[in-house]
Amino acid sequence: MMRRWGLAVLWVVCGVSCAVGVGLRGGSGVAVAVLVVCSGVAGVYSPLVFPQSVGALEAQRLSALDGRPVVYWRPGCKYCLRLRLRLGRGARRLHWVDIWRDGDGAAVVRAVNDGNETVPTVVVDGRPHTNPDPEWVRKVVRSDA
Image (cartoon, rainbow, N blue to C red):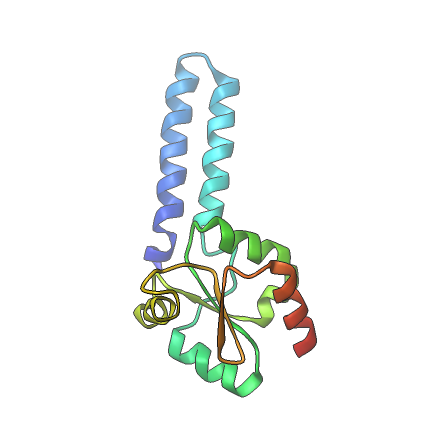
């Protein structure tokens, strides 16, 4: 569990350290700005932004049962974040696989992207779509409802 929070905690610690250093020199406004920016980046890297990840094999099994798409993603990916935010509540209806935590998921992504770990990769009905338009994914999720 701590590994999932590692990058987020690191960003917060660095932000606090920098903010304290700047604040001691009299730059309280800059210190607050540094803390806000580092906290925001920490939020992006935290597991709070994305739904609970499952393993690739479990996601494939669940997708075969319920027909919902599988999203392969990684923390810190701005395109993954864009997809997640644009899906809104609908993101909870997909199966999310963190390729940094799941070697099988990373292998699936490499297999469909010429050896590259390009994310987000969304698998709908067994067909992979690399970095698809969030609106298209949204329509797919709505049609599964």
